[in-house]
Amino acid sequence: MRRRYCFGVALAVGAFLLSPVLTQSSFAQAARQPANAKDDNRPIPRLPDGHVSFEAPPGEKGVWNRQDYRPFIPTTIDETALRDRNGNNNDGPPGLKPKASDVPFQPWARSLFLYRQTHEIEPYGRCKPAGGFRNMATPYGTEFVQVPEQERMYIFQTGGPHSFRPIYMDGRVHPKDSDPSYYGHSVGRWENDTLVVDTVGINERGWIDAYGTPTTKQLHLVEKWTRLDFKTLRYEITIDDPGAYTAPFTTGMLMTYQPGREMFEFVCQDGNLGGELMIGGGNAKIDRSSPIVP
Amino acid sequence: MRAKLFCVVGILASLTLAAGAQQGHPLVGVWSGEWGPTPTERHPVVVEMTWHDTTLGGMINPGETDAAQIKVGTLNSTNWTVHLEGEGKDEKGNPLKTVIDGQVENLGSQKRTLSGTWMRGSTKGTFKITRE
Image: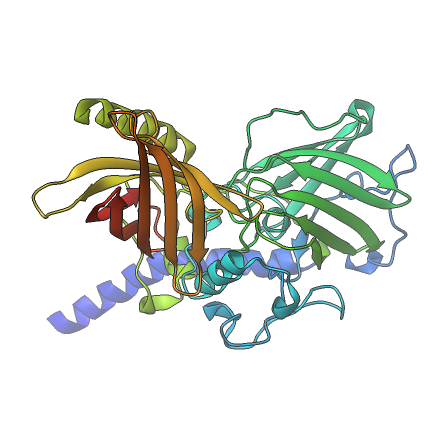
């Protein structure tokens, strides 16, 4: 009798603890139903000034989500991150990403890149901002806010540090002596219907993608966004860093517009399980010796 | 000298802590520790390393009378070994060459270490420094 009572209590407690998960899961399922799915073939929206809009149409909700988040296609097991060794990946159309073996790494950068495929302690997973590719490959969605009357735009990300980066569209040039920062200094322009953003001044405290592609303070990024159709955004990034590579190279990914979704409050520091998620299970150890988050 | 070097280490370490973790070239930054010819004779040291394009540079014991500019710096990233040659002056103003050969350990850690042999002039010893 006592055993049955304990079992009942345990069941009730378990159901109570699971309820938020079930609720969130149901919510997520509901959120995955595109509110405007029937309108996915709509023309590419434009702002009053004629430029392509990356925003949700007026009166609607919507965010952009990555279709994948790795920068290179591995050709060997050494080039393959632990989390990708099950083979489940979507690398987009041919030609979008280079093979890892074709990336013009300097020797130290390639060695460090290979090392990080099995030592995946990514700063972003510990709530640090990350520019470039990782900024767009954030989980839970990215939102663009275009403010043509102020000649600037902003890119907001839900996941990671839940932060934003401004892009100045007013023709200004990069400051000559700015302090390096996580996102750097970005200026943008339109080339027909493609948004082109030039960024310098990125510090060496983050990774520019989830795979530990090394960069130095000499990093110069050129990012391009092209809305291929209503629901697809092509993101292309050229990495020019003479401190880590022998030549510039380009990679990219596709992003999908997800109508009906919107950004939500995401506090990375609350219950962050990133450390375990990033090191590939119980095979690796996290160095907790640092008094500050590495 | 020890107090002055301690002060330099403190200032550099404070600056580095404020700067956060280094995720770029793994040698870049301020490293501190000690070297010595015997297990009992040890001296505090600071090595600040820089990287530009393909050149490893920096200073050994910056701010000290025996400060030495790194003239030769190489990293073998297949096994993460480092060779440094610094040229400076001793306390009497005579030319002094320092040659360091070390092995990077705990590469992924913010507190990665470099240890090996340290030649100061004709005096040979061992060293271990930790990235601040």
